[in-house]
Length: 277
Image (cartoon, rainbow, N blue to C red; front, side, top):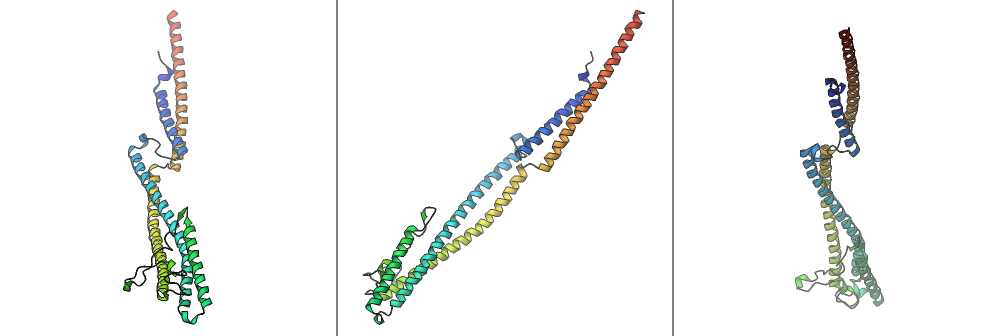
């Protein structure tokens, strides 16, 4: 018995249609996800490379985020230190003014001492309230011990020695020590600001290098796993055209088979008539 479904043309058309459907399905999936690799079978070696690159991208992103946050914290600290520096300079100026204590009246010295105490209170307040994202930025700034009289073997003194009744009070204390403490404090603030500036510059250089590496790694990852939209649209169009062509071929094959079967049936009927005669 002859079947119209078993003709070579029909079988070829069905096989072509299956292949075309696979092409269409793959292209539609890639266009929908934006990825060339959606499962391990798409590209086994490619998925290993993509996972490695993706891990590198994550690591680089964390490093960039961490350094950026560090620089923001350093910048906030440096900003607070600018205020401290202004007060330190003012403090130093008051002590320089009081250096000629004998030429100043008792009231003038008392006024200078009051201003010094106010500055020290202001510095203490700034230390307590200067924060970045909840963390204090100037811890220990007012309690630092400035080396005074090192050559004489004297102990280090802090800013509180400048207060009224202190060892370096401008009213009745050691003015030379007061000047050493004030200039030492200015120098320490300037040095700390310079150190922070160097750290920020170093971090910025590292950040630039990390960003370049991040972009290059991200680009490599994109090349490995991202779909080529132009290519996939072309493949989709080709697959759909092949589907249509396969359907057309199968339809023609069916028509041809039906014509052939009709001829065979007609021949068979004619043969039967001839035999009967």
